[in-house]
Image (cartoon, rainbow, N blue to C red; front, side, top):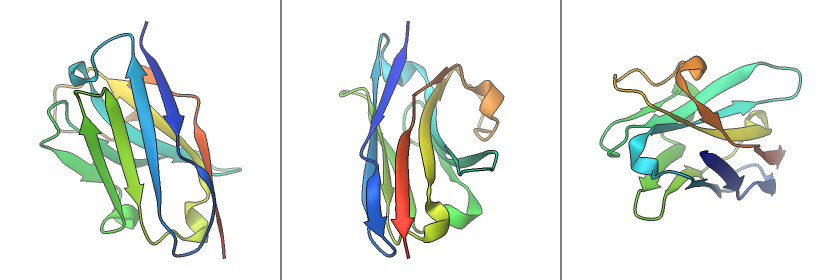
Length: 125
């Protein structure tokens, strides 16, 4: 059974930075493409960023390009999301996900088999 556990969320001010982490257990993380999604209060799930199994390919939602950076350390079975220049509209619960995806399209949430419980990021303006 694969388990994902996020950490690193918190309350910050606009313009601050945070780094989220997602630890994978139960199976080596290199078996999966991984992604971050988020859900703001009263809204649907939104794609944030994704990274291929070997870390070579990445994809970002347009509103995150240039501010967020996704990375992974397969030796540590850990996924990261560095978030810079945070805005109030980035306030949401952030979820990591893992999926056996073998294409270069990473944005479809239904392609991900495993999900973490989420970590809350709140940005005050």
